Length: 72
Image (cartoon, rainbow, N blue to C red):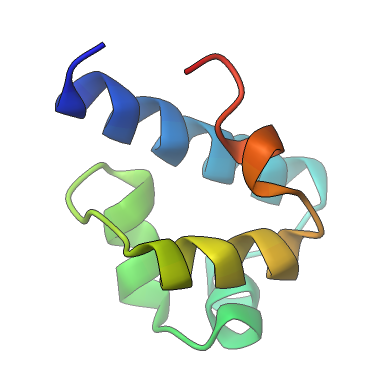
């Protein structure tokens, strides 16, 4: 699996988890301590979040990193 495929899968899993929990990008950003624009860029695969930001997103979504990395 190449870098782009990993980034795509992580982005999809963040978006799917966010939508399942009925959380807006704005609310997720607030909970994770980032901007809504950054969440949007992550979900569009235009930003590659650090492990720290990824962990904060997982905490905000109440999912584990292993859940986020499912299918990778």
